[in-house]
Image 1 (cartoon, one colour):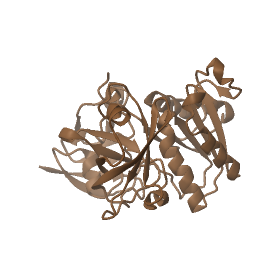
Image 2 (image 1 turned 120 degrees about the horizontal axis):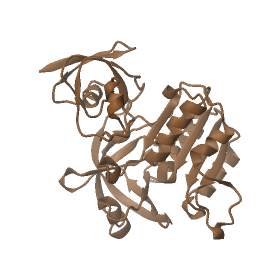
Image 3 (image 1 turned 45 degrees about the horizontal axis):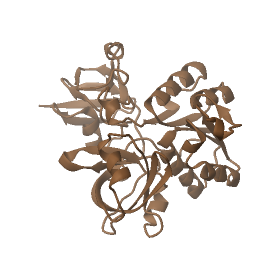
Image 4 (image 1 turned 180 degrees about the vertical axis):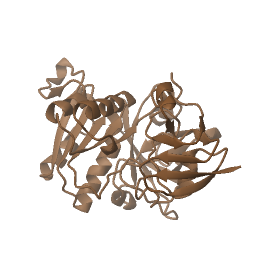
Length: 347
């Protein structure tokens, strides 16, 4: 049985089967809907169901609460239709520019840049054309079809220079993690890894002229780094502030890189924030929660765009406080919450 889905305010329509999710059907029809984890954990795909009925698969209450569902909200990544649907959702222009491909990659280097952070570089096969937008992610396909997602940490033009850089990823070690234990324990150069991508709707909206706040926590810097490199390459000079929050000074694993970008670009400012500085850090910079540092500097975000990436708790707090306290329009808050397997299963 098939149903028709109509998107508002664009008026675009597509057909889908009863056993498909709205998101997968939309992407198959080359219609870009916002999304992140695709597992009902991050809430990036939340949209308003104006007409019709859906059934939700497994999802986290923090992504869609019972009260929100009762009020007509839905998660496109895990909602299947029971009738024709009319959905209010903003479309992501350019999301379908690059086809999703599966390909083998070769590990070229592993560099530990912090006690629990590894920079992994991968060589792309010459036989595959892989394009993406700065900020998107790939999925590693492991044994038994298990997948793990990581954002590209360098801009597309740098990945294409495969002989120089290849693809850069920032991996945080989660002890007991199926993939990260392997990265930090057994992985070595020349290993072959199978990946699929690009995925995600987290990337710079280049048709805007709004000032930008880039907000990262931990390895959430990875896609933010790619966006900064892309802006430099494309000559985009919109006023931009990069806030990077970590626990201690040792966790600011690319502090010198970020400071150098700000020194070389008169449109970019860099603000590092530590939540738990150690005595040996002798830290004289900002402290506390990184999203609160943004609020202290920008009590009015009504004319800005925010790109937030990192721990789900940071992303959720930033969205809530920026929209409620600093008048940021919700449609200009773009996010990629780094949901771990524990986050996805509510552990």
